[in-house]
Image (tube, rainbow, N blue to C red; front, side, top):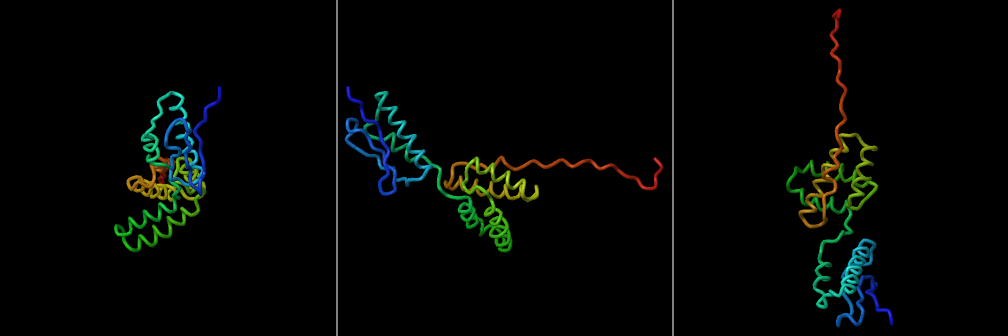
Amino acid sequence: MATQAKVGLEVVKGYLRVRLPRYISNTRYINTGLTNTLQNLTFIQKLVSYIDRDIADGCFDSSLAIYKEYLSKPKVSDITLLELWDKFCSYKQPQVAYTTFNKDYLVKYRNHILKLPCVSPTRNSAIANRDYLITNVSLDTCKRIIKYLSSCCSWSVKSGLIGNDYYKDLIPESRRHKEKKLILPFSYF
């Protein structure tokens, strides 16, 4: 008995394409429209395993509607944190004072973002950036930067640029100050 062909993954002119077995469908390929990057590759590999599972279970959708719907789901984008910040700044510009915008948004916070070790807006990057800020800037500055990054990511989620705001819950706790003893000068007690 011959082994049946499996669903394949191809790169054609820099774009990922799913190759279907001949005996399954009249349509031989599913063009994804995604470039050949590591994130897109892992995303499409999940689709390939999903199609393989459907073929094995005998519930393959020959119209390919389910699989094309899977491709239309939001994917992890290749946008960097700095690009998000620049778009957020253009959104905030009419809402804040001219000096605040130029001094804080375009210089101070942007320079801090440029120094961050991780540039992608993912959960692990957010944690690594928070840890970097805690060790390299004061606690107050760290809180302020993370608060502004959270605002940026929150706006980006609402705008459909990214999937989640990973900075939302990362604002560090304040250190507790020791209570000072009350010193009464010129007292005998």
